[in-house]
Length: 148
Image (cartoon, rainbow, N blue to C red; front, side, top):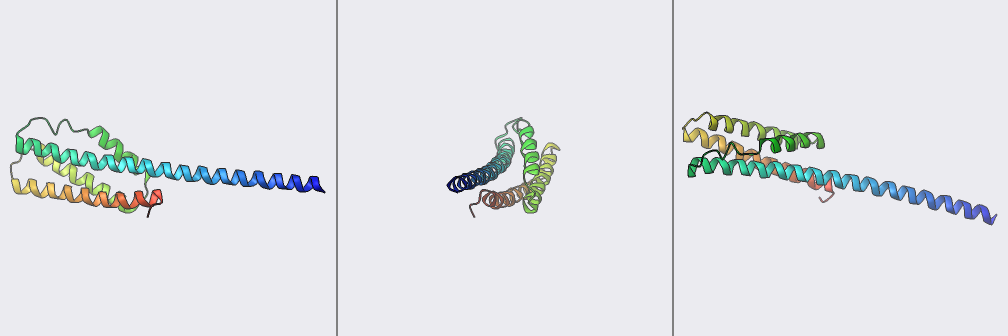
């Protein structure tokens, strides 16, 4: 009888260990996903700030080619990763608005138009979209990392 109790205890112990490993793996995977999400959101925000800084350098300082040197490839990659990583509607809508506002601002700037009011309105839309994206990102990342 003692052998059966020992065997049952071993089976129960092994089961507890396996369940514990599974829970740990899930927790680690969730944390890693949250970290990836954080990295991509931060990259999109940083690139958006860089974009407006480059526009300012060209407009106010007269520097040439600053906007052309902006890293469009990194932005597209971060946006694609975010679309894959997150199904959150608020984040996706904020990302779409940021992308649309940036595209409209870029088109206007590259078009060489000199209407300062129109440029300022497009720049304001972009900055507003960036702030909305930051807020949506913060909410989603905090939830994803479990730090409400």
